[in-house]
Image (cartoon, rainbow, N blue to C red; front, top):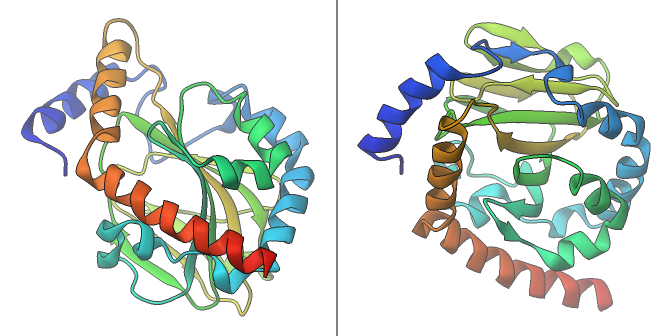
Length: 235
């Protein structure tokens, strides 16, 4: 989906990034990360209620066609709160505390629970745009934690429950879960810190992405799933 213009701007982002350029960043590059860490168990509580309906949660590729290059089975489940300016109100209503905490995240573009099932491996790929930074809050990490990990631009890290992981997903990266249980994170994309006027240009590009057929189709697919999910829960 990225156009030539977006790829050109990515080079500007690389040179103008206020937080520099690396595979991983310390969590304190985002002041709100500490608040999420302090409240991670509240988020985990709402996640646990959803996991009672795990099989009914959508596979990522059923919402986003572009993910079919990475996954084709039922072992990468999602639960979206927002995606590039598109809110998912019913999902948010089921998780009020998580939604309240997300409201305090500056520059939030995408947020969802990412459920990586047992034995799942996501092959190496890169994110669509370096104007956003990827954030994970680890909510459920099976034991041993070293059997769940992510490699970004050749550097490997492992999740720790209640802790943040911040990385640049525009670098080649892959993730895996070699355990027999789910690994779950609160997955977010946030605007990359940039100085003026590049921050304003970045927001314009992100808004353009949000209006793309890719996002609009995902919105329609998610709306259909959400209707069926609510009917199943009431049934």
